[in-house]
Structures are given as structure tokens and as C-alpha cells.
Length: 179
Image 1 (cartoon, rainbow, N blue to C red):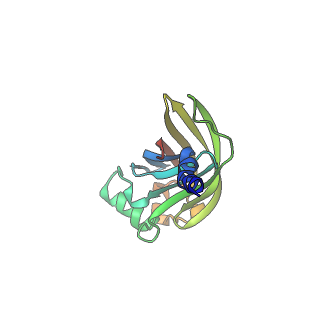
Image 2: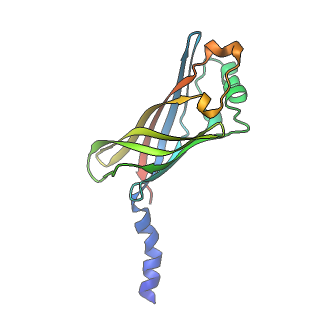
Image 3: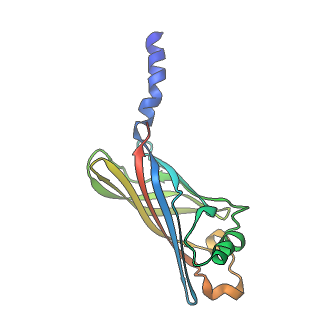
């Protein structure tokens, strides 16, 4: 009985042995339209990757993006386009297609297949990412495009030339093993 109890108590440690969480991470988006450039960054990325089960989940608060050209631009982003009071977060969760070995230094390109939820709209996506290990430190980076139409983000005709219909997104994260 004592052995069974010990196994049950230690089991969560073994189950978490392959789980990494974001210790610091950022998401940057960039819109290059004929009449305006818009870029903003959030340093508030949260997420986990379970290497053993090949699963992941990331989220970001929409209202945490900073670096707009003006306070008015940030206000329009949050109130008119992203409606951050109604849709406060964006997320991406799913499965990693390739096997990943974080026990040795190197770099591997993986495909993450999952549901990208922005503005309350979910889209099934496969997004390439690079996971690198150097001296035991794990990092993740990814660059991809988000179509505003895919997520029902409306661009008013009056500002149509100020906002690109395809937004460039860059993700960078440092990961630490969950204890």
C-alpha cells in the first residue's frame, strides 16, 4: 500500500518532466498599408508546451499590445478592430506534428497544428516554428500571417488604405522546464 501511495505521489513529477512554459515571450504584429504602418508588441505571452504529449497552448491579452504610433491608433485597435472588451484574448492551441528532442543543443523546425482564435473566431492552422536549444536554454520563434477576414475583423472603408488585410505576426519566447 505504501509503495502504491509513493507511486501516486511521484507520478505528477514524471508526467510534468517534459512540460515547458514561457518564462518570457513577445508577440509583435506589423501592418503595412498604402497610407500607414502599424506595429505593436506585447511582452505578455503565456503558454506551455508538453514535449512528451506533443501538445501546446499559448495566449495573449489583446489589450497588452504597446508601441503604436499614437494613443488614438491604440484606441482604434482595441475598440474598433479587435474589440478587446468583448474578445480580450487571442490563443493558439493544438498538437506538434514532429518529434522534438530538447536534451541536446540544436535547432528544429516544427509544424504546430491547432486552433488559432482571434476576435472570437477560430481557424484551423498549421504554423511553422523553430525551437532551439543552446546550453540547456530553450527558445521558440515563429513568423506567420493572419488574415483579418479569417477572423471577422472588419476594416471600415474610410480607413481601408491604413490597415493591411494581411497582418505579419512574429512570436519569440524563452521556455523553462516546469518543476
